[in-house]
Length: 223
Image (cartoon, rainbow, N blue to C red; front, side, top):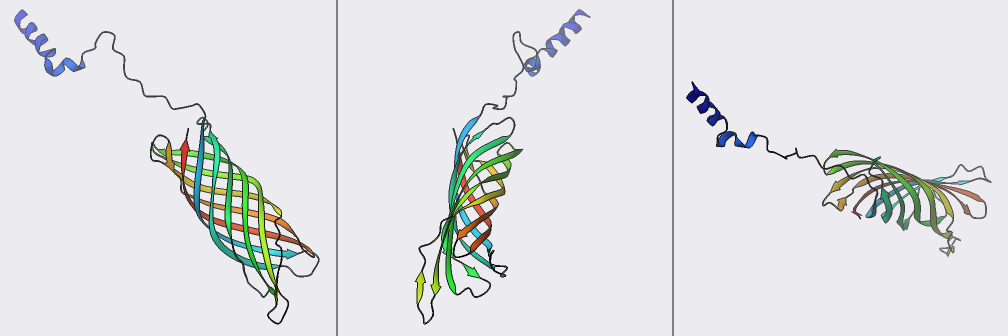
């Protein structure tokens, strides 16, 4: 009987089971805690902008002229990632190149429009996988419009205006992805909508409404 018990004990602590026995002083491995301290980052991006807008003249019965244009856009941001909560706050600047404006009716002049926006953005992000976040963005700020015109004086005589660069109210919304390439670098594609509203200092009070739709891609570097 003693030999049988001894044989069972020997089999139970044999090489096959030695790895499951508790070891004095051993503690279970704990998962690494998520980073909860704020991190600073910079972002650079570029893409293409599609604009739909309207010019309204307040001192006439004319309801305005609708127009559209499109041009490349590029910009960047500097911000802070609070980690917990999953929120980023950033200061962003974006420049859309000057391009010809296409009106839906005859204006008697030719226009070119470009603009630069400066916004304070808040981004709420959601972790989808270890290397992928969904970003929802909203922001508010100002835009510096750059519009020039050539006026048809008749007989093929065109006169160029010196241009107008008024400031306008700006707001934007966006949705994007944050795809981690390394611990510090992410690829950040984004779809963004922005609205700009400003007044032009022309012969009559003129309000300019601009709706922008942008497809962007860029890189984010976290410090």
